[in-house]
Length: 484
Image (cartoon, rainbow, N blue to C red; front, side, top):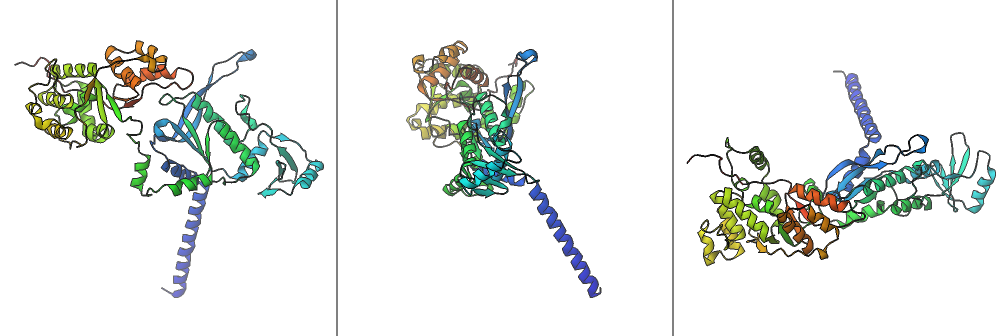
């Protein structure tokens, strides 16, 4: 190939590469990538990550004809990062200080001048030289002067930025403050674990010492109850964190910390006792024609995710475990009625032999010998009935306690809660509530009932601490109508 053609080809390739690079750079710059990068950075500072870009709703009163109240309008606010199991809402904004100044002047700030108001210009010049950000001039007396494309000048002074409780039209407020007010309204209509979510604003492009006009906006956001973090706060947070930035470490940070909401002493519900001894949790089970569909579904779930090593044991191991006498009695009755021999053996190890009913006696003779008196040896005994490695620091047996319930130690709403609970659920949930212990359960229906009653109260009334196990396990049971 002639040298001239070679050079031409090389030049063509080079120009094509440059064109592609320029297009790529333009695409990146015009996309939301910087915003999503900021959201990801904010997510890495969280724990108990629930999700991204979640919408939360509240009802806005609507006016009908003739000034009468109309049907409430459903309004929503977008939260960029939902963390701490839903207790924290993070809103990320990459708005710049210059943009905020324009918004502040454009949206609800009193216009003190006009096209030909030269006096205002002279006042601004006399009272201070000011600071110019883009085409926006900020002077010493908190005036904002904006010039349009035709050279016309307008003076604005801030007026009512701190009136965050005003229910009037929000069009007179900067966009980021409107967002803060919307999130405040949504949080007031939302409760997670009996509390309203905490709102945190992350503003990576706002400096540590912004102009006074910017500070007034940030203060107004804080007046809604939100936490505001600027670039300096984010830098300090990153410097204080010694965690490596590898992807695996990041996922470890944002993954829900199972031990976080748990007390050092746990109150174990009957549903969890069943899950701890069920054959479904400890060994492969071949589906039988007579299995209930719920059992079949649990077999499929266990095949995808092992309940004990991946969920339950990480939550309860290393803590003292208690259960009420009524819960233990009901558990033993169920196991004695439909449990397999392996399930009866696990129950005997988990709770010990019941001297009153005899349930558990004879199913594991080794428990009667002194060599199985310690938790370490009980774990060894339990290992014989499980394909999963049993944690050595699992504190067995679970201690059975008498449920003495005094509702004087908890909020008055407990009396109403009591009316909606069965005898066994009263013994479990009310007892745990009065003691301040976390109740570990998979009884979603009861937990929902309790929270609906407590969260309907005004303010933040704290109900019982509960850790919900996402899935339940039943005993395999015996074939109905099986012939001998």
